[in-house]
Length: 93
Length: 176
Image 1 (cartoon, rainbow over the protein chains, first blue to last red):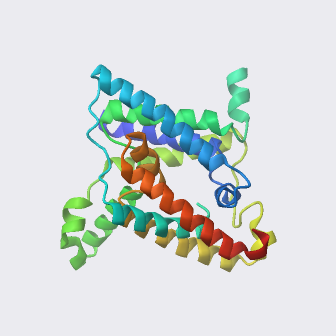
Image 2: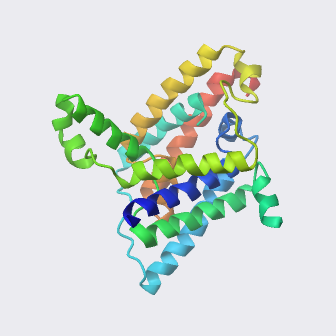
Image 3: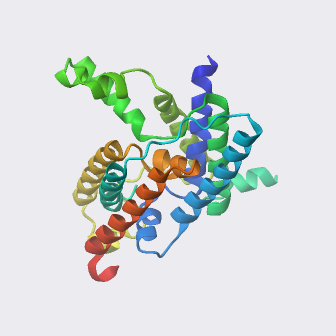
């Protein structure tokens, strides 16, 4: 039961944060690429900073193991990123 | 009540919303030992559909082992995401059925709905395909990956911004 409830609760807070930052709107995403509105960058960087401190703190205290690190393959990550940006600018999502 | 007032605000400071995202990611790691991501769930759904229609692709290594046709963590995440975004937008009275973006689009590209829907459809295909190549999307790789200091996330962010800026420049032309 908890196996199903926990992911739903996590998704709830995730989308709640996204919606409250206004990232459901077309102009927020595209204006980041035009540097008229830095919401996306601020949102991402805060999320990364808070998460990084928390994760590494918990790891060093021994509560968690960082075993889900995304694998790096430079060509794939870079090509994927380059293609992703095109889609993001087209769709604004 | 202060809490209710805050929830009724349409837009929070990005710092506050970002902090909530960071805390959510930490909770995910602690509770289920996974990272937040959203593109993988779609591929699990693809895998289910391929299996349902007995496509040969369903037997490929990718859809059999990498993205198996099971009710994965990320599909359940989608259910929660729909609920979360719905609650947030209803509470702040931001909820509305939109055929077109509220701002900016009409001024730049004109009132054609077909143009908007074609572009979002093509953009969506490119996004999902690119996420498959890179191994994650904005949330799964750029945010969750960088959070664990994986170089993959940083490389992805660089690529995303380089081509995003160029594409927007081409689309907007003089209005950039």
